[in-house]
Length: 260
Image 1 (cartoon, rainbow, N blue to C red):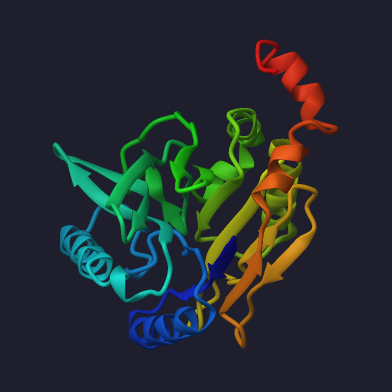
Image 2: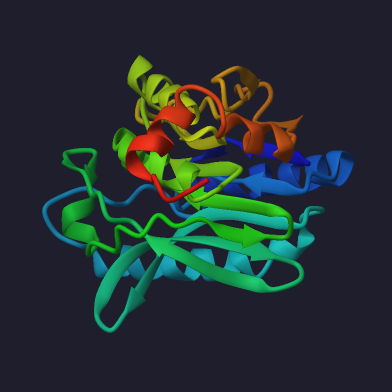
């Protein structure tokens, strides 16, 4: 199975060109799965001391518009997240999109940072702590959105539940912590881990560098400014075998004794 991980620009002025390049690259490489960053189709507006309703409505429209265009991508499945509003509450919702089934909501972000560059506790309501993987064709995938990767107990849950892949759309800055958390989560879960990040060009905020790690935390692919979309093969059987080896076998003995 071929996985394409992408970095995508934060700036609105750069998004159309990046989209056109992504459509072209996907047409050439024809991946099975494309993983995009967290809420990729709007600028990062989630700052300040109040919610800007006009910017929020625009973010919703931007994602509605681009989700309608996902069929232009030569792939079976797209994984990312989007801002949504339901019953007066705002959420960050992880979803799958496929040519066969269209939009499939998976879960809503629970762990919300509250820092100057990400006032997510103000902009969003908490979603849910259900990290159960879902099935997309032969693939079982669990989602951790951005800062949720800092809670590796959920990576373990995803692995014990039999996932092959952790999809990790993020909007992260510089620092070894992000890579270290992704590597640890891959090892803990026995899953491949695809982490897709935004990149800022006009300010120092998001660092790009999207990754695909093996269940043993081997780096299989990494994006850069020169290569914003990279594709690598994964073997679902490798993830299945990884669950039976250290440290996953020990974890299953302690945390899921009823699982054979």
